[in-house]
Length: 553
Image (cartoon, rainbow, N blue to C red):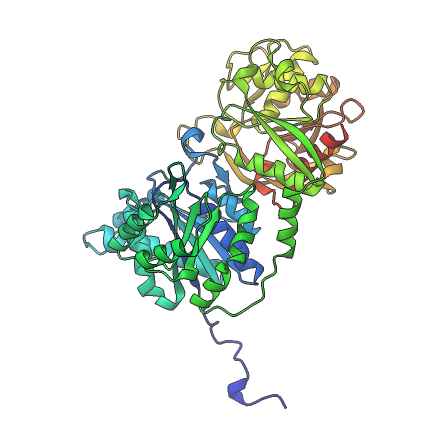
């Protein structure tokens, strides 16, 4: 019989019991760019596969408010969230691996923290007290972590601290996460330290000393790591792991290898096979739930053992830094997974295509062309040449943001007979400004967070390639731009054969352009950034369509 005593019947008016959120903090040592973001994302994937609600957060010590004004050569891609935050590229890894959509609350920088504390001081929130790094700055950081966990309903918050242990700008963040162990309870906090294990000399001798010193620096600020994730090119022996455990004061099963792999999507499988998730579940006293990695293992198998292959030229102005267009590269790989094909990426600096005939020579033999985003005039002639080559030679083409704008310029010049047509971003005095500044962008002086940002709706026209690819009329995509197709030229370009297949619901903003498939097998470009919504288990339809067309072509 069910218990119907008053004590057993829940009170509908009683306040909901607050969830006991667990926190995992990921730090890095020895060198930067060591893989903290991939480690965090992989662990998030593994915990989600076990049925836990996971929230991902990046704690970035740089003083910038966000990544919006940072040079891609220095910082890599600027990733954009649904709500328009311009963030570190690691948020892209989090979204792709864990298959969640993040918000601006997932990105915490020194700039936002100090800005908030200064605003509070100006309002008098601190009651005349002296504002200090401890407790005010650290308190603001902790509040952003805990509030994020509560607002997302997460079982586990995984927060990655950017930079390297020992960086002076990272100290307030390390102090804040140290305090979290006291605030949340030792049983609810886990510290993961990602470190480099170099191998030197002709016999690839493993050296653990850098990791020992990195852990020493971490312990100097009061944090003892619970898990070591060791980046290494050479597999570690049990003796080497035991030595690391002894000198760094972690158990043998908490020394996790992260060896180089052919694909980053193999990292969750590597971690799972070493018992990383089991260790985390035990240490944080989470419910024992079964692992469910069969689908993910299938993804890895298709990446490593495809039955087909295509070669895609990716044309941009920041191709010397592999991180500058990382979401585009990953989206093309996702499309390859969907088509059981290996996508060979041919990264091409658009400036190398500036000279007449260079595009024909460099792009000969590629199966598809992608023209990437960018700002300013550098490399524009090469991008236009790449668009023209793809259009005239019927090579499957996808333009993204600035790539779409270059496609409009190219078509206006060479098909619509608007000689010298250009974007006013490059030539303010062009006779045919087919791309112009958005009306709401005039008079804006600040560069940070002032573009058209975040998720915006788009309506697709009937009987178009766009509608065929998406399979629905109304879509939403993420944006990051100041310039747009000049509506004064839409009618003229349409008469010349151009198709404006996607617009804002009020039809004032062009979102997608294309050529009819009777003219070209696959020619489409977007003002928005489709790469931000692609997933390894769910390739974005535009990238999937491009790779399918490349295989057919």
